[in-house]
Length: 454
Ligand SMILES: [Zn+2]
Image (cartoon, rainbow, N blue to C red; front, side):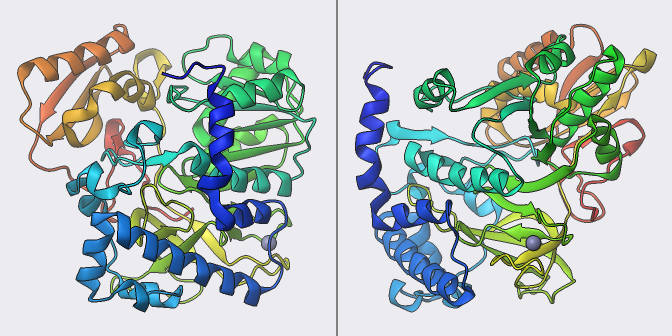
């Protein structure tokens, strides 16, 4: 094992070789995006050609995709030619092994785990190299700067799950923080009873986080009667519903919404110049909004979001159906930015379970507690069946022994600490919302707005 002290140097030393000329060009775009649509289109075509050629040579899962599409890498050298590949579903990806989906020349021990299960209840393995992670995050930083983030700003990040991959070396960030170059503090919106006081004492210029975490922060500050005065707030990670937006608005700052997911990181960010659109991160990914026939919908129409990550080579994401709904917008934002747009994002949303005595429980709290136990779960849905009872309906991926079920129940019950009863129920299938989307959480009374358009 390398020591923590030597690791950043090793990672940095590897970075240029791993990024390659194309990655370095991409990194440059996070500082200065291409202004001309034609230049951006040419660059994206080159990215697709390189991605498909590399993935075909190294990733069995991608090789089979091309076979299914009846094409060779030579046929797929542009964005438009990519439509020859079949759209992949969460199910396709779950059924392939991790080895099948990973480039054969990537050392598995260097990969960071970005797997996800929270948003839809269906676990999907997502892995990236440290360099890929930094590159994708650079696009997120660009969006923050677009909203007016400055290098000296104090940024409070409010989340539910603070778990970090121990392999994601953060020494550089810590060093930057010590040098005063990165003034960021992460707050836990669930486990920290001193959340409001902590954020107020930090005095952030910018507050970012998941929509319902931000809403909880606003609630907590109200209860304490304290105020923070950020210049702006950036929400992400889930659907920013009107009730959530209203609660967050009590922070007293403009709210900018972003749209992203574990599979590809940032997908789109709300137009900073108030055009009412979302700018799509066109230089990091290809975004398609497809109708039931898997053809692109017209501008102004809703469809399913399908993404291709231009910079994920270790575990490629090609024409992957995320399970979200969005409304396609104009191919260029009216504000003049060089990006294509979405008009609205629908999909994944979570709010709280109302317990007795007016107490609200965020289902993520339980999900965080059982996260390590989800290995045997194919899909699940957390349902509040009474004021004091929560049931996790589980479709198992492998045979579920009473022992693994018991371990999961114990973990959830210890997190609940008597606030509600908890039981796992094995089922054959999980009922979807009328929209067809998975419903990860169903509160008492069935209130759930997953799949609605904001
Ligand atoms: Zn714009």
